[in-house]
Length: 271
Ligand code: SIN
Ligand code: MN
Image: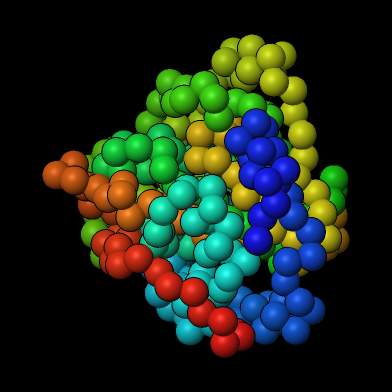
């Protein structure tokens, strides 16, 4: 369970890192499952621009029993319920691989702009719960945050790709620009100069097994992985059950925008 101090830090900075939340056994099981998913051909599997290295696996809890249990484990689900103050469901789940030497950058962005504009979620009542599957260091492309920037709300940013292309079933190409190194809704340079001057920049580093929670309005990004070690993250984006998409719900594939919104209950039976 998160302490009051950790919840305060989340509210003030827009994120908090909590070390030691997953056991070595659980990490081993998840890493083995991730290796299996990397090898499965699935529309939610996205490659780096080299066309070979896996960049991310999307919709893990829909594809894998291990992930279906992981998203309901008390440490993750309890943390999401605590910061959102309601029952929740998984809007998105993914593994960002950031492989040794080949893992590419994520430009500066906010998450909620995607969930509002593409998926029609009315309020930023979501949270990202991230499990570090490897140690995140200064050198393997850790998440970088502008602490406190979540309080700005949505910062204007441009969608560069064709809006008609994000089709159900994953065969249209548009949604790929929501996952690629040349990202839709990336923040422009002039705006970043101003925001970094105001909020500063911090890297979210820590040992494997740490949990990181971050607000969907927090400005974040990450550099490429220059180290010979992977930086794999499992990221579960929980939405409050009081924040369902209405008539403006988008058309993105299920693995990016869940239509299954039944409130989750805790699974305490191990992975
Ligand atoms: C994200 O923005 O969702 C993840 C970025 C990263 O994996 O570094
Ligand atoms: Mn993001």
